[in-house]
Length: 363
Ligand code: ZN
Image (cartoon, rainbow, N blue to C red):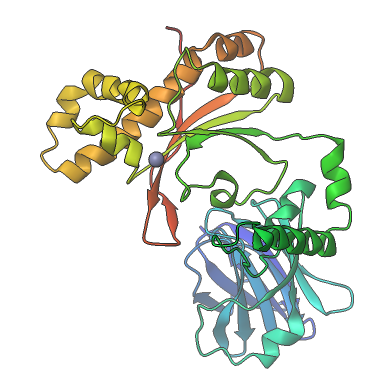
């Protein structure tokens, strides 16, 4: 057999063995008749790395695309997607709990998730792509549990001079957090241990924590207009020094974003006053990359590229700082990334540029 077997379950009261393979094929053997598979079913678009039996006729599979699928065996039929860890996070193991009430699944997203079995059979799954509800989720890194903190109704009213609505928002948030994790604030008091320093734009549409789904205590943030890092900005350098030398962050992300007003202003020729001195940094980026930029006849593309180049330039300045150079000389684990976010109408942010890692620049 050319295919690599990765998972199996014994079903039909011990009379049949079903195995999942690297190619995504499900093979079945009748017990005792091992010379050849009695059936093979090509239904999974990716490898079937794990599976578990729900009853004698039904299995749950998990694979490289991060999806849990419900499969009936007689006849072999795909019943629906019952869970999702995300396509970048292959599943490693699915198992049924001892009381038969939940399927537990874990994968490369470092989370253990539980899915209620009863609801799988109650729900009328017309839409096979619609996942069933996850009941609860644990993370191998406890800090990531903070991702799921509830959002409470917004009572903010900018016309209220006392901002009572904003304070009420805060109170509701604190109550929701405590309900989800009674120890949350006690843990916060002890210390912060963020692994990431985020250097981003002040733009209100690019909030660091929300974009990367991290909670309080998980990301150290510095923001300014157009995410500029340069060697005379004591504010930014102080943040960088504290993050690297005291907090010992492992990643520094410089995050630009398309439709950045600061970059657009720097690209034009109008004067805006004091801020022109700040935007001079971006004009320098333009000057250093003039040929590449002016080869782009489409103004929108040129602006988008300038956003990317500005983020890369700032990341390079991070790398060239004595703070980061000294950290690397000490052997400290530290990676610098330049990101650009695509910002769509209203709600959706997409990362459309892959991480640029700038290790150990020597000049
Ligand atoms: Zn911006």
